[in-house]
Length: 393
Image (tube, rainbow, N blue to C red):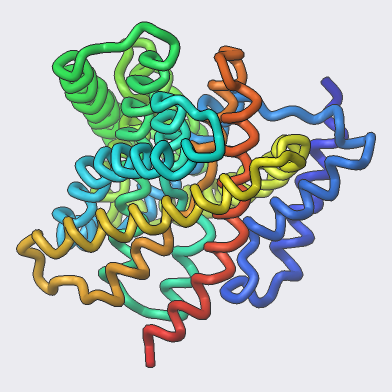
């Protein structure tokens, strides 16, 4: 593998982030995805590759740690009900309802088995707030919406992996029973949180003993990937391990000003890592997805895209209206939370896992899922800004 194309991709990411001065109008992720699609036609970039392992074991831990570490703890407490319900029950309900709608809508003109419909739904359920949270903060200044969207995304990444695994195993003919799936979800979640909490606790005890900032930041790299790999090794959720670690580290330093200098160093390092990883991720998504965007299923893709928007709004509005939250989200806020369910890294990871298994209807599922993810990244990201402005009226 040659590294030159990846360095060039990183340079393209730098250029886009530097010169896109209206990120709230034209967010960076869809721009990078579009550039990636164009680059896929250039032979120099046809050697680059993105694998499920690269996303899951290298990119995702870094992105999740930054999200959790920067997540305001006081806001997490304030909107914990919204975040927990949408990230667990809401995610599962959305997957089921979306799968049923996809099967019933497409069966008239496309031969799509029920389990394949549920598999596509499971792929498209996870949300990625990277391209929308900053827009919401600037345009709307609505704490409830931005906090709920970001918090839900962190939590449903872990839940969606269990749901996808359950449906994928059923598709492969080795399904768990519902009680087994429930126990698996409980173990995977609790185990991941426990590993992450232990790692965060040990890290917070070690930092005061390490007075050199560079060594402290170095230790944070070991922490992030250490808890992720440890959790995965015991068949728990590495995703939830990284998230819980990030939240614990953030909570610890929010209570003390002794290590303010360290937090500055940690912020600078991980924000640079986040931007670099996201640049590569969205460019590689465009390059990888490009060959699968030329097909005859675009009518099905558009229908599925509309279905995902409708079912997410249905579930979000329904569940949040039942919660005794204070203040309760308005209809406009529920709609905006629904609209911000943009697809991203986890959905692409699921698609690549399906590809690796070469299951029945792989080409059909891959083409539809990749196209729906690209459509979501481009259309939803661009609609957020005018929708947020409209809400302010």
